[in-house]
Length: 226
Image (cartoon, rainbow, N blue to C red; front, side):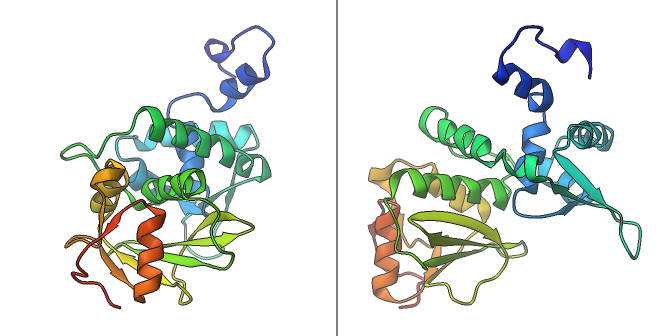
């Protein structure tokens, strides 16, 4: 471990920061929460990180037992996944996300990249904190054209996030990551659903339940399917 990253006093929080407190490390953990990713996937989702810097961070996280890599059976691409220790950092990511929602919330800046995964982690955290306990078995699906789909599943009064399609969704949201992130960071009193940029597909009662969960007023069903 780099001696410049050691705090040299006893504190378990300091111990943790010595391992994952360096720039990019927790964001790599964030982007591996929903399953394995390739090196190229991580470069794309982290935007300004250089391949050299990403290689260094991945090696540090591997050495710490947080990330492991899987050699491909066919081809040359390596997949990275979280270990049990890495998955145990999910509450840390969620807590940082919640702090940002409560104390550093602002919409995407002009030209700022918005990727689906951070926006959907924010959605999960927001619902778990503010929307009340959902009915078990409820599924909501977000479709971002040209990118991965994401589903929120309710179980034991909490929302859990997965990547991929789910045909059992009661409501499907069709939007760009930018528009959904802008909605999620908007003041509650100004929220309207659906909009011309956020289409909701589902029955009228389910769409109403969805809008209520986000404290949004239900407007004309432009583009929605009831």
